[in-house]
Image 1: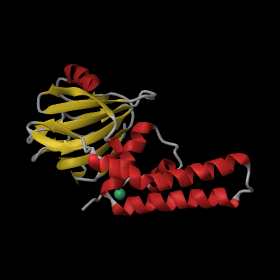
Image 2 (image 1 turned 135 degrees about the horizontal axis):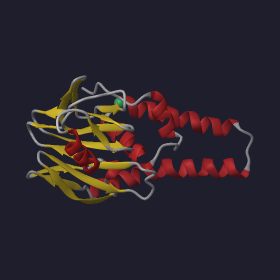
Image 3 (image 1 turned 90 degrees about the horizontal axis):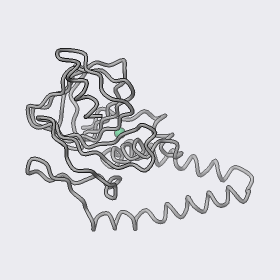
Image 4 (image 1 turned 60 degrees about the vertical axis):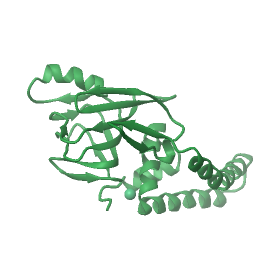
Length: 217
Ligand SMILES: [Zn+2]
């Protein structure tokens, strides 16, 4: 059962199209796994549609409403196309299906750092934001670190734990400079991460590890 969800503010911003492509994709991917947040998103979209209705009609609002209707009616077709062209990524002889929100995203090859493998998405608009698939092999661990910016992690498969909890498929976790943690996975996991600054390692060989943090970002 999913225990960690995006905030309602974040879902409202997502529905209003105010988030970066990367973060929006992560929220959409979470909603595919979470009925509760999918409903919150629908409610937020309905409220926006009503708000457009409530305003006196102007050429701009009429166009917006027409676009919204078009997008809604297009959805089932888009979903059907996705179902026909399911895309998987393969790591350690295991195939993982990409969420619908990421089926058409451009991906770079896997890069391996010991038990951690990262596959970066090619984003058109980055603003310093990077989106990646992060795979942790069974028994893998990321050394103790904090964040210079924000880090969103969505568990797509498997599970991992840190000092604050245990996270499984569908959980979305936000970490920033206020958190220090060392994620580890007993069974292995595949996560979608959206970060806007490199990790900052705080213990052990931190100078060496911070080069690794630049690579993981
Ligand atoms: Zn949720």
